[in-house]
Length: 118
Image (cartoon, rainbow, N blue to C red; front, side, top):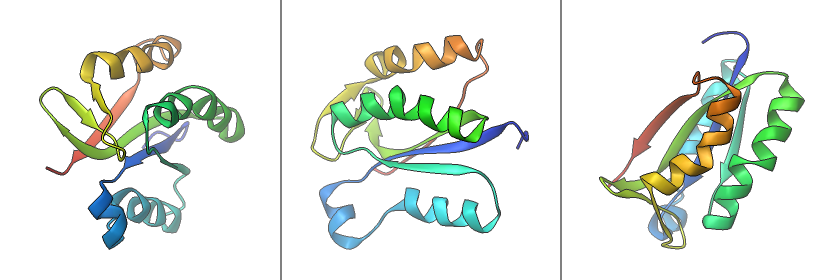
């Protein structure tokens, strides 16, 4: 990882994941902390929290850490988009619309990782 980046985790587990304590993003957070890699975790339950996590909260973390984000999305999805914890469905096009400001700011250098459970 480039030293001017941090891992910004957005996790939206299903109801069953929450019930069973299956939180991949939380596990990743702890692993990154053990490795002393700068990181931040966001539990994204609904569309409003997704928007906040990708705007003001992301900006705050960039300022706090003085680094650029590497986004890690941990949520359920399919070929059409992602499903949030409360069953809101966000199309890939809508998600890209939310990511466009940070991508523009980073001049196309935004890195996104995804791990989807079906």
